[in-house]
Length: 135
Image (cartoon, rainbow, N blue to C red; front, side):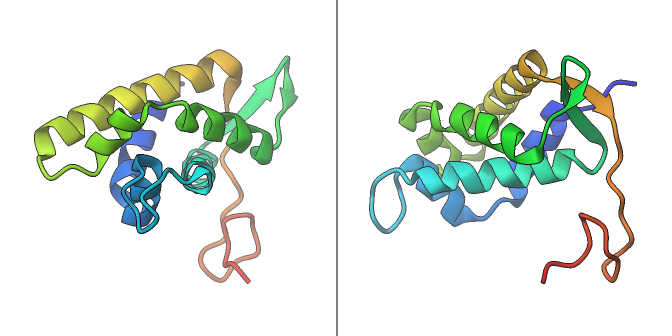
């Protein structure tokens, strides 16, 4: 079963908050890159992916925070010029850059981890699973 990791990452670009992308591009209030933005974006991506897949190394499950740390570092390595295009006004170059970055991040995840079907336990918005309500 093939999972669309690249597509999921691309969608997260559309749904992540503008302050996160501004932090990656150094276009926020402080006008410098914010490493916390990479962490937040990595966490968002992993939570989205974990709804359907799990990550393993040598057959052993890998904790989400390990995947988040790996992905956060990969996001932080994206050149600031490329991140600047992510918050640009023109949708054409912005979407092309998002697609390129999504493809690169998906490739890095698949090179580092084994991707397995492992749907997270979900019990609706009132449930108690890992995707249940935040307290």
